[in-house]
Length: 315
Image (cartoon, rainbow, N blue to C red; front, side, top):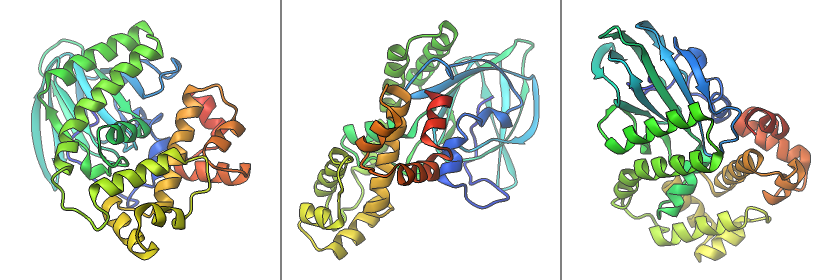
């Protein structure tokens, strides 16, 4: 059943760490009361993980598992009345074949539902990887590294394109389609979802760095992931002091240049580990690391496991 609804941070333990959320993508259905029918886990898809489910006719209240992925769910069979709890209040929505919802990264929901007919209840869950979202955001003229609150999050989405993409991806899972086809669908769906997000960000107030200058600076980082980029290099690129660069960069992106660069490198590493035949050492060098220990430690902080283990699980 859709992992969607009232967006909130996980309860009980404070906010979830990024590494826990990234590692949690593969285990996201552990919290679902549904039975997995099929999945793309072993198909080598590079841009998303997709799974189809048979959902029970009745589901009592449960907590969904937050992940770092942008999650899109489309109902493919059956009719539900689903309820999501927010602030002690329940709100409901009617689901039928083609109904869709979106959950932004790091969000958890309290859900329950009941079938409205005797038809079997089926759904497809599409986890769009964060490096795909970042890449498309940047290609569309955005800043990349969108924060969870900047991404779509809705209990119901009335969007024929999202519905069509869900059906196509569900069929791709069943047919065990090649990665080229599936990744093309993932790119199209992500681009579609980010269109509204990017248009809103165009209207944001300018920072000291300026939108054009910031985009050029982020492009410089992306082009130099393999080199030893310093704060002096970035300040020279932006033609401002290191102090003003740090302040303006954090205001615009929500993080420091160093942290942004590390996250870019880790997402590039994850992409290469999933989609290329490069050795772990070659991936390490391509991402600007000379020490295997430092690379492994950075990757583990971001993804919750070592690079080699990540490749064995999702590669």
